[in-house]
Length: 420
Image 1 (cartoon, helix red, strand yellow):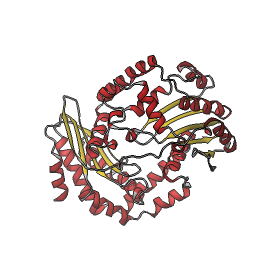
Image 2: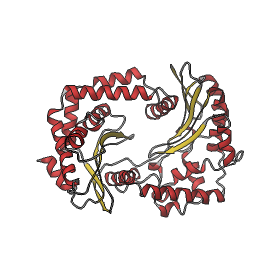
Image 3: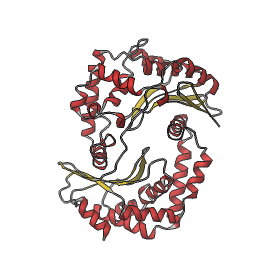
Image 4: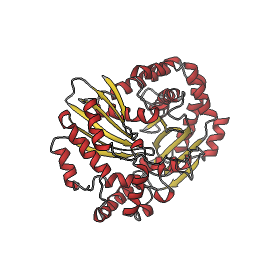
């Protein structure tokens, strides 16, 4: 498999990876325009714009966009995160030109029809309502808000209802003009693809775009704090977040190995102690997430209101214990799990294209899998234990609680337990 890159004169970047033997391909455009690029008044507009891209262009109406891809057996979708909005399709390799034509069309020629805006506004309001009715979704938005208060990184991606209800056609156009510039776009393709052919298509579809003004974003500042909402639910939902390395930090792999050992699988410390030995919950896990200038290691669990205090205290105790006795065997197990998960995940062209876009956005190059594996292998047991000590005693923390959580200890009490 060969990774190739090319940059058009206007800054538009193209990255492809040919995967021999595949009859399909995944292609898409990743735009550095997510939730953190919004002003407070725009909160939710990046996601609204993602929805509107499929609602009609100068060349196709909404049905024709869907039919163009589904008539050839493919599918098309999009997502919005805090740092990027992605538009992608999976098709047979002979239909890659069609997929790119549709994607370029929805990116460059949206009409933002007033009737369609109102229809999609209702859809998004329903999506917000559904999220609010899903405790193990909404709790992570609250955790993010407490970790990064009063800043773009802490706002929800969907946005509040009052903002979504008032976005206008002019608002959508203004955000597009400000952020959808060629130097902030990456076209990634993987599978049965031909690099030179895709470069020619990109030149025809995106080469005439004018570069935009330099992007400015507020740096993320992890502050921490607590959010607690009492509600009559079957379970008490508990989420802890700790400041962690950003994805350019040399410690990012240490953080990921630590999170896998702590709560990344059935053999992890939290799963074994909290679920298997004590039966306090059905779900508990830890994960290390990262952004361009910050990161957060998150622990989540759901339990009964009567057991939430015990679960919270044991979680802190397990973090402290890991700092003192995390052994070489479990660190190696976590390392192997991490490498296997990465390599198995990259067996699909969609995962490959996603990785290509992410790597080019971060480093303007695609590190080889061998290079990434070497960095994972270079993390020592001492590195992980040192990181575990920092997480257990010094890393700034945030907490979110939802449901029957009256008996849950305050974050300050947990901080005192960390320090004891």
